[in-house]
Image (tube, rainbow, N blue to C red):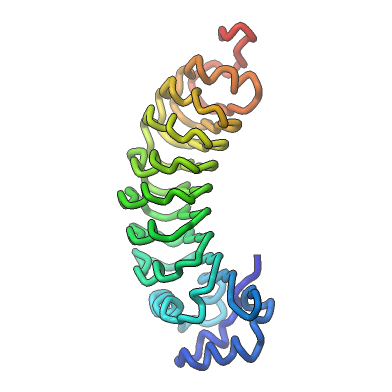
Length: 257
């Protein structure tokens, strides 16, 4: 993906100067991707931008970014490595109504605005933050196909996820989960689920009744056994459970360990 490497431009105080530079360069490939002159993809790596210009303040850059109406045609937005002075994403992000992919990673975020649920996102990545809960409104994100919540601080499975009927990929590795709800069976289109590195001691039988599930990663938990409904997936090589107390031998074809 292309890097939004505009230290010299971002150092300018005036928003008008920034937009004039973009227009002058014709949405050049080094800044962002465009379609018919309209910005469609933007990647903003704050760590690298700070290395190039130490005067940059993450909160100021974000606020300025979300205030630029010319960028609201974006379909993909990636922002990473915000510093601790930005514990939450400004709600102005919800004005980017054409977004289909949103990535806010590695930034220590403690919350995300509930209005994100109004966006027709297909992919949402909030990995490597400090999230403990999701807004209840997220249950309405019916267009979502891929959700990444890895490396956060979830003690309980976010209930809003159980309403995401079109979800195909879910990443919850390296959190603090101790259980998985039986209601996960509602996600009938789920193909890939990662629960690596949590504190799971048991799994619901219903988890093996998701017909589309092809890959289930359970490594590094506290499981003594898996439900019989999941043993066909284990036999097929789609279930991975290394680093658990359970016997690591694959079950025999008759379903017995």
